[in-house]
Image (cartoon, rainbow, N blue to C red; front, side, top):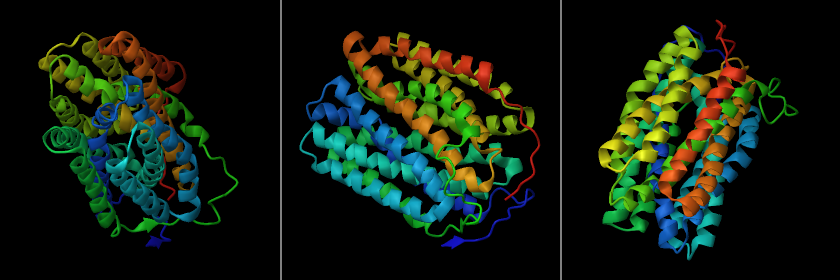
Length: 394
């Protein structure tokens, strides 16, 4: 249950009981989430949808996630992390189970829209809990490891989801995708949750945290590329007679497992710029590789380069978003940052669906290089931040 403890000393070790539990819970929750990313567009086509509808399956989910995140972020600051986390997770699980019973794509889009509310709430809350339990002088490293749990799920869950979908049934897929976050919920029961001081959790505060807007804008353009990958890579590979693109996600995620903690420590010690430049360039290069890919080795190369790129960019930008905000605004900062993350995936998926329908899958990846280039320009024109030593005020 919520605990009013407030002080976490900078010297506290990173691998506390709560940090281990929050990582394990996040692993199982993200596994249920990642199983559906490459498979739901295929399910939409199975129900009679077009490429544009397949993209909308990702887009409507992102829209509802974006709508709820600012409110969920402020609610975690005002009322505590636990209630928002558990309510969102329950909506998440029930929505996944409902996919087996939808009679058509219209009902699938409705269920997916509701699912986004659960994901946006639970993910905002669990990210805020992670920033609560990580000592501030190890924030980059800690968020790197926390993100690894999501990345580890990418190493297994998309390939597992595609395997279950092709070997068994969609119902088996959805049952498995609901069971995994249920395990995460049980683990989360044993976490000790910080309860912000009610005198500091100002209800009149803005839904969005201003200091997080720059990294939010950058991650928006970066995750537009991710929308192209998760929504259409399986369909693109199938059009090239590659029936199982799961190894791409495995290579991508294993690369993230190695790169995220390395880049997290590097950003803590050397600053953000030394990490962001190669990271965004790798994201850009990935889209160009996918544009020209025709064989599995090319797809695997793209997975490796993408893993390096997002392994550098994601933890760095999330650290930038929360590093200099007080504890009673961490929920708002995480909500703001995650809004850009989801909005980039959602709008990107809708846009890429239209482009794929009009020009083909390979051309959408050429166009997907444009957001990566914009992200690079924005970072070096507006978003560069030199980290300064900060005292832990928790």
